[in-house]
Image (cartoon, rainbow, N blue to C red; front, side):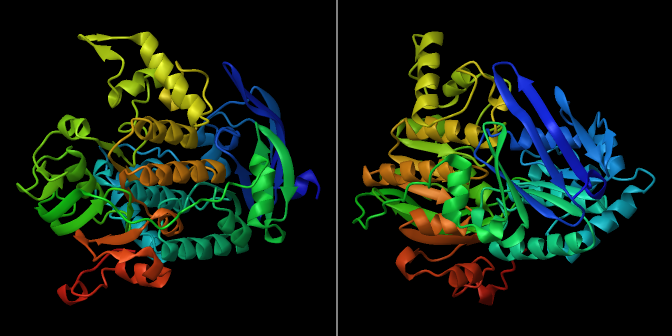
Length: 510
């Protein structure tokens, strides 16, 4: 196909950063109406390449062709004028503005805010994306923020739509609706570049796949003719190791939650209602649920971020910690990985060495911080968890999403917790890194640690959990052994339809 028949053409794009070549001479073509997958492990250069197309990053070398003609895309505004829209993995939303106001900033400013709000409601309903336009972004969960980003992109009527891990926090039902939308858009001539680490999705949705490794193209294939194993080999040079999940008898009671009812802290939150469950040593308990159904509130209550829980409603090794501060719980052996990497799991502007101090105190003594000790710990985590970073002094925000996730998860796992609470452990990480993180969780469990995993990826929960719970509208379902659970049953429970919940009229947004 000639250049004039391509909507987008990249020719030998190069982008360098200090100490690393993020993109090393990449060329690719995307014709109108094609769903084009971009596959690669964390740090392969995918997001940097997409930011070049979107005008958020200026290439050092190379050429961009649009409808066969050379263009210089100097900023996202120019990209949007051409008809390019992008949904970032790390969201580009203003926390203090509402969802509708954030959308308004990215569309035709001749439209009134009221008109944009109406369009948000219409588009969200048409595509099955639950978005409340008047909610401030800071009150939204990761999944809800992602829906806002997707709706904002769709409202621009793009000619090229770039999606970076769009389904990482969507339910299976919402994923299918999104795929229907993308197929419809492609049928109307919209080109789509689709970045995902979910190989089944790429094989089911995409017509062409470009594979990156180390910032270079290592293959181009028709993903429908590939297997997950063959795509893994193209991406990381090997198949991810199989997990060993042997059945074990759980040990002592570690975490007991009962009668945990907690009013929301803001008007857009979710009330927790009579939460009750337990986690024992040597078991992984998984919590499934649609984003925005009380996961954030539950994590805050368990971690100590919100110390308002009723006395006696949270017990750690038999001790009442319902109103204990976070540092007291950490001293007792509880470690926590939040779903938000930048801003909560790590301080974006601080180095990796400095970020170890958020939860690790080995380098602190007598009121002094040993800089050398923080660097040693950061270097150990980088090496142990295969984190791609430009040294221990690299700023957290300079890492790809998956590599930062490996560092944060590694920081807490390496602390040898007695109870690990982890939210969205493999959000946005490649298949190799996901397998490593899941394997480390199972090693902890086999070593006697109690693990509570909150995830919106059902496949992940079925792979690593011993028991499953579902959270819906601030309520917790009964637990079910994974051996007795099915995707269909858990899907129903995610709509609040377990025994006793349906009678109360529980409704959960899709």
